[in-house]
Image (tube, rainbow, N blue to C red):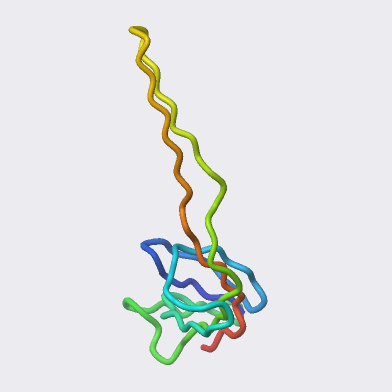
Length: 101
């Protein structure tokens, strides 16, 4: 069984046992999270919510609070002007423990 959840302005297709890196959420490592479900499928016909499926939930456990690899933004103009910036986007790694329909 799989589900589609929405968090951090993005949608993710998840199943039990998946590890997902999502936009940073508050919580400590080992904490539990519950997500609203937009779609549930896998057994017969898919159930689509409007906007969420009633009675469905996805539960997860926080594995890590970390940052992605650094992304370098380098700009150069022919007059000799340069600008270099780096950015590391924070994320939360979640282990999906249960998908309930």
